[in-house]
Length: 435
Image 1 (cartoon, rainbow, N blue to C red):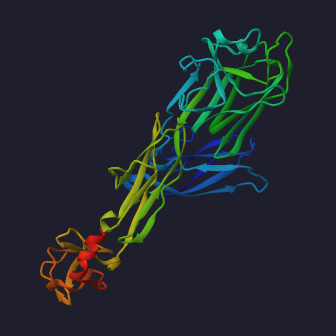
Image 2: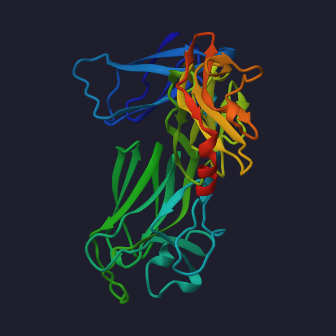
């Protein structure tokens, strides 16, 4: 079905677009997608989303989303559509939390262990009050408990190494910040989605008092904190040139700690060949995987790649995967396997294998194609009774067994006759002797 949704609001950069007639646009449900745009203060945009109904009335996939301008002078710098409607994901956030860092593993100077509260933390270090240098501005960032975090590897002077938090998708609501050593430190905070800059703000923070900052960054997957500028605060000696900042009580809403950025694709191949499905996920690893065939778990299908060999008509159907983090899971869209019928194709011509010093031999072949496959072995052009498998065993080979062996392989799509394998009993002793 095709349903139109309209952006609402003039300053928000995030809008919910309903893909089901009559669905509200102020909350997320399984029939909604999220659209971001890069310029605030622009409205009058509409979206047309083409969706394909799947089993049980659910939306199987968002095939196309076209964003059309209602006003010719409206320019959108960044539009990203996330097809969160796959199988009802984003029904509700995992959790909303004010992170005080009191329950983090603390050993002065060690970075936050990942994942923590559904986020991946980079270049953030824990600092309890017992280890805070004094005098410094670290204590000014302390709003509750006895622990703050700060951006490590800042160096002396210039700009600090960025510190980041990332996940599948989350909202950064606010936090409490202070400068460790410098007055009028500039804190730049940038929110990204799929690598595109969605939010960017710069704040001035103090070394003597904390500042509660409200971000309201909605629907991002990465936030980068950078600090630069400022002047040394009088009385602060140690590391007085480092543009460190400290923070406490970070307010976040984790919507998904794992998301899929590359869905499994349909595969079409000839019977007897292989088929490979893959998925790519991002967010807060580690991830686990469980592949399904027509909704049923596949034993051993627990990697990001699912490889099927010797595919047949029984393998035709829908393949999907559930990717899980430590905090939640997400289901992929379905990928369809189509198998094209194939006549027999010989991949290994009849080969003689000596089994023992008693001159027992096995003659085998390898054939691929549509199943069921039937075989008939021949000796010097005459069918061998009962020799209807892909191999034939001959025990205690004698001179009478010398000759030409071949096999006819057949299925519903055709037949093929192999080349000959020649058995010379007089040479077997040499083969056995050579090992």
